[in-house]
Length: 344
Image 1 (cartoon, helix red, strand yellow):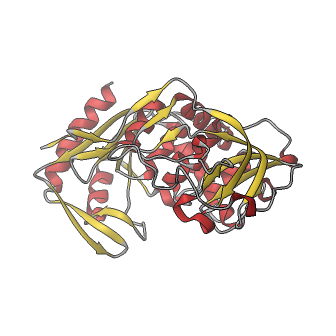
Image 2 (tube, one colour):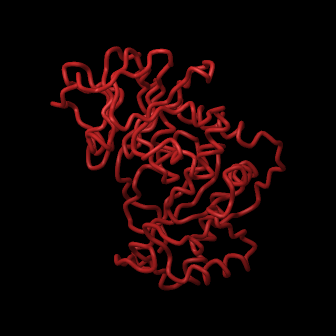
Image 3 (spheres, one colour):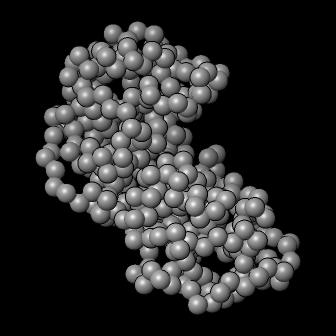
């Protein structure tokens, strides 16, 4: 039977306290093109500026993107111009979900400064232009009143007299700070400020059938989508919507159903939503759980030990496929969960 996932894999703690932050003095930035996964900020001693580190929580806190110490000769790097106010943005991943809970999570203490003097120091991308390639990133930068000149790219590294460093407010598969939700909701209101007509009785299913590639997808999802549509459920391909349109959709409300994916992270822009997540295995990885808990979403994470068949293997741009062996039975059981969630 379709049932709630028995295991959450990773941390799920929500912290009321803000992350640590500081103004680091006399530190050196090593970009990923120089240091690989050792890209971070370092003191003259070679020790890392702890707040610049990016941890992951599975299977336990670790540093996939950083190093705690460097033996590089830090005196060899050029000095950054001192007339700017530098803020550390860190590793920027263009993948939608990783961007929302990664680089964006460092902007919770975004300085209310004249943008003319502001410079965000980043790594993980080959140029400032790369930060503006994705439409959703351009919309977010625009909402933050940021232009390309507000970003500083140091492919050969740089030494800073001062740089502001805020710890991440979302640590993947580990924990999240309440300030992350406050920041995301404020950002969502700025990206889509218009009033909306609420649709609490609406049911939306996010389909992956039009995605060209990804981690995993449903087999014969078009058949499932058509069956759900016949029941009055709205079928939406989120990647075909602008960020503004996605936020509008979440603002209107209802119950949102989707296979586990970063499209559900967009609920953080609104909060207090109702969500059903269909998972590919019985263990639910905790990133979406963290988004839901800090956003006060009412969410169910579902899996069927008998009816779901997950098969690894690269097919048509996806690394794995999930087959729902008996779709009729699945839809019947899904409707029962929907009814219970809507009644809350």
